[in-house]
Image 1: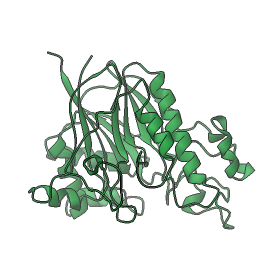
Image 2: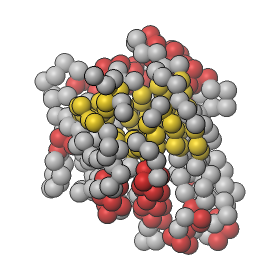
Image 3: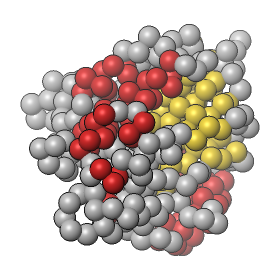
Image 4: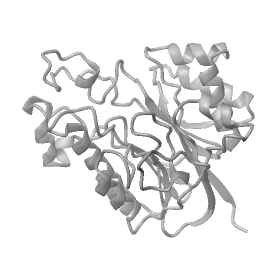
Length: 319
C-alpha cells in the first residue's frame, strides 16, 4: 500500500505587531494565542505544513523558536523553507497616494516591518529544488499594474507575501498567499493584484508534475468580496482537484456557500472559505478536513483561542 502523506496549511495568527515579538511569545510559552496555535498544529500532526502569518527575521531566530516549540509537542520538522517575504520591505514610493512613502501600504507587500506576516514551509522529509518567484514583477505579468504609480511598475512584485515552488519527492508544492482583495478604492488595486496572484499560481500548477497548491487564496469562490472568478478558475483547473475538506463550519448570514467548507471565522464578512490544499488531479486523496470542531467538542475552545484561521489538511497517497 502506498505511503500516505498529510499536507496542511494554517494561518497561524503568530505574526505580531513588531519585529522580535513572535520570538518573545514563543520563547516565554505563556501567550494564550501562541500556545493554542501550537496545540492546533499538534492536533493535526501533518507531515508537511505551510504556516502563514509567521514573522521572518534575518537570523531565523523566530523560526528556530517555532520548531523547538513544535518539537515539544511531538512534531519534528528538520526540513524548512523560510525565505525573506515581500511584506514590509520599503518600496520608497508613495504607492497609495497619501503623501508618504513609508506606510505599510507603501511596502512591496503590505507590512509594518520587513518580514511581517511571512510564510514557512515545514516538513518531516527533505525538500528538493526550491524556486522563489517572489521577485517576479507585477508589471511582467499583467497590465493591471497600471493602477499603481508609474514609478512602482519597475519595483512592485506580483506576490504580496511570497511565491515558492518546492519539490518534495515526486510532488511539487506551490505556495498560495494571495493578498487581501479589499481595503483599497474604486481602482480595485488589491483585488486586481489578488486575481493576478491566483492566475500565476494556476499557471505554475499547470506546469508542474504532481502539483499540490496550499495556502491562503484570501477569496471565497461563492461568498464575500474579491475576484471570485479567479478563485473558481484555480479550483476548476484541470491539473488540480478540490477535495472539499470539511469541518463543523461557520456559516455567515446570507451566505450561499456550504458552511462546512469555511476556513476562517472573520467577524465583518463572516466565516468564509479562503484556505486551500489542492492536490494534483492524478493524485489519490485518502481523506481531508478542516480543523473546525463543533461547539461542544472539547478542542473547540483551543481552536478559537488560536485565532480566526482554521487548519486545512489533506491525506495524499504518494505516487
